[in-house]
Image (cartoon, rainbow, N blue to C red; front, side, top):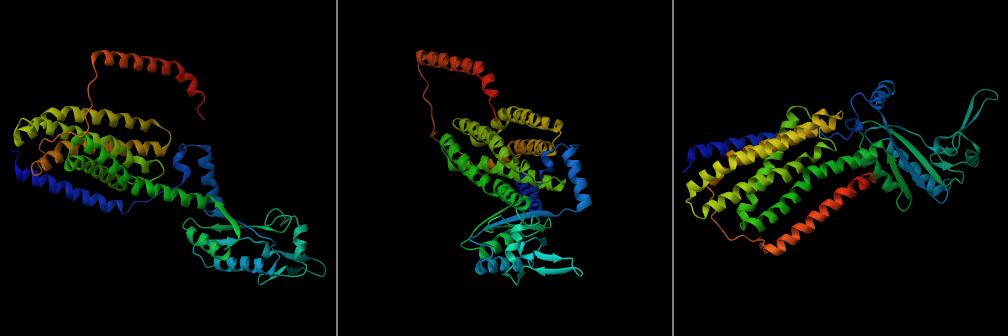
Length: 390
């Protein structure tokens, strides 16, 4: 049997590395910027940097409130209450509101008369509707819709702003838009790709592998190895300074989907060998039979993803690096860590749950003919379908 001490050392080493990589993942930074989806020398990207250098990195949130009358005292006070609370939210730099409008007179000096006092409209407040400075900028011509632009910093608490708006405008119709709102939704989507979908995918793969292998342990082990490979990949990505963006957040899903099959093939072969060989011999034979196929399969797939390095888009290059790394790590886990685990966890041969009955020769010939015709039809039609892609 393979040396138990070496197996313990291998398992301990891989466990320690997994923990360390997991700690690095805690320091991961999620980047929702669209810059990664543009070429590095893109004019748009350069212009954006120039704008930020000139005017700072402030962003804007737009709140639109629909009422039955902006000058009605109740509506006006609720908007005033929102504006007061807005000033106390972290990251809010400034805002514009129709309630800050004033009548300016230059006769006998500069006289400024606000149209609102503590949120209550004065008698002449409706003059705003004739002022092009405010009309269709901060309110509509009917005096029912208010637009409130809010300037915020990069680290502004967007959720706090939306929660405050929800409390102040309860029962009223309001909308929020702007880059920070989109960034917040992107952040949530990326977090789901990192945290929510991998466990779901893990469960689905385990179920499918159980149907094939007929054993819960045999189904779980290759799926766990793919999860560990994903953890190593994200941890290493943080170490070398890669950002998690909308593309690289899918690297873990790629790794789990692609690399879990390596463990499946290895265990499937081991169970087959275990039918007629004793435990140690079956394991040695499985390693010998699967070493080259698994390694070459991982290598060719990794090289395929490494072609992303020629892309002018930084996000694609990072995705290529991470997926390629994860696939190779997974092959190492399957060829080194998995045999060490099987030294202590035997997987005796069991009856497969998923079996396909071979068709007769005549039926097989008919199936081959149908498949060939379908392939030829799609080969002819595909160029025309490709031109219709939106």
